[in-house]
Image: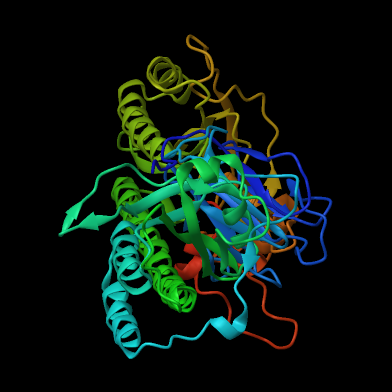
Length: 565
């Protein structure tokens, strides 16, 4: 089965639940699914929370996160722990409220096709549920076989291996000659073949491909109970079944969570007549064992995907951190402090500060559009090029124009970088001159003389990577003695609370009002963002959020404060 890596959009195709158009989710930004009017995908049912789940592209891998919903979110029958992103792939089943969705890459439909025989007839139902009285195993030999089968099935490490183990036991314990393990991929009669068995004689297969499966039988078993067809039924079996010579068939749903995840299909044809009397009981017991084993497999698969994703993200974060300067330092009369805290999504925050000569200091902070490995790679490229350009030209406008020319020619369409870049030159009177360019960034505050933080209006320019050949112009500002500049990424003001509200500029200013140093600027602002994103429960006071745990933030948060000593 293909996965959804590098796919720019996915579709949630509804398989069960109230009728609706399949939502198509793009990689532009995280998508919230819920009952609220503010949700990106609205599901109007009382079992759906206002903000139920979020789907996003993380490190070039699509993920789904349960947002502490009341009734939970299931992936392939496994209930997801809240606030822990789980990678999703094409063909996965996502259950939210009464809906079950199949994940499709870009709206495509891929997978192994499998033929279901059209056996619907107008004369009435000919498929019946097996009565409870017949669902007991009578032969000790088959009870022993069932015990052995449970151990073999539980030891399987992949779904195909599990299916093979189930079918081997099913054929041995029921007397049916043909068997198939099917995975439901669409409606009741849309199934995918995982494994099959054909009759043997003297230890040799009699050949033939996978058995054609009764559509009516699959549809009936989809309701969650074992069903059968027999030749002595007084109702019409349909011409296709007669032509195949099927005189007896069983279909047992394999339940994971509360829904069928697959089916064990068995049939006997023509002269094949060694079906055991308690075949239905044995098949149902086998299906229950298979359901528990399959649930464990899928839970382990989700954990494996999550661990693999976390390793990739951690590697990307470590690479980003190695490009950053130390978290605090002094360059002559310029002192600085900074923090860059990775969020759930690999993003592209960049920051650097360094001497240009004995007096001047260069500094920049920016944010690459989008998330994932591509954004992280563009961040690394931009940071290296800006560092070299600023050292070469000594002027923020010239450096930015050169970097923009290179980035525009080498980054993929739709990618850009919002950036603030400046050169600070201390003067003998204790003040400093600042030449800067705000390239579509806008996230910075000035604290003249260390006082109240204020926004600075500027002409600005477009983000780099948007237009090749754009000429940037620098602006100038005088910084009184003791002034500080606080520059931050959009992950600060755009960080969301559980309610969906954004942190915003006013909260940023409020967090900085009472602090008196560059280090305290950074600590106060990052702490305020963490507490906003993870508020304590109403019932009591919890410890203040630990900043290192803020990797659960939806976006990277980078804050720098530059102080004129």
